[in-house]
Length: 142
Image (cartoon, rainbow, N blue to C red; front, side):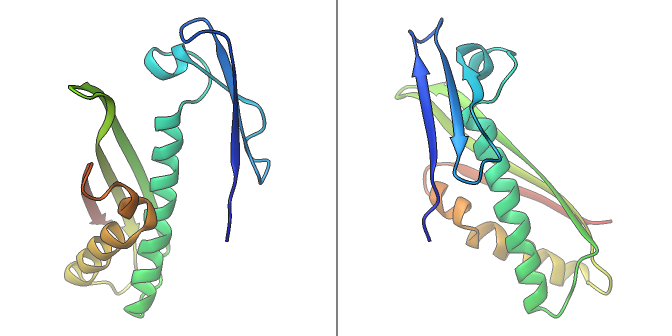
């Protein structure tokens, strides 16, 4: 399986503008710039896209883990917060915090916690950052 996305940038770092597009067309010439990355400009940025990817990946992995425990969620809602900061080696993603709230009929706290930890550790986006970025999880049944 191969997925693609593309980016175009025109101009210098601070005054330039870019656009990202995805193979699926969900993002098509979506604007990004210095101000969308480091200030509060309108558009997206790489870290926001990573947060969306991680939230989606983890949530699907959690659904799979629950299924392996013969549990079917009514709903899983996840937010990913990506910490992007300047380090001695330049800018880096230093931490990602996942917060998920779940409605899972019949799930015990321990079964849910096991599924959530397995999903956090096994999701491909988590694996991508393993060893370089601290990934934390706040998972609760509601």
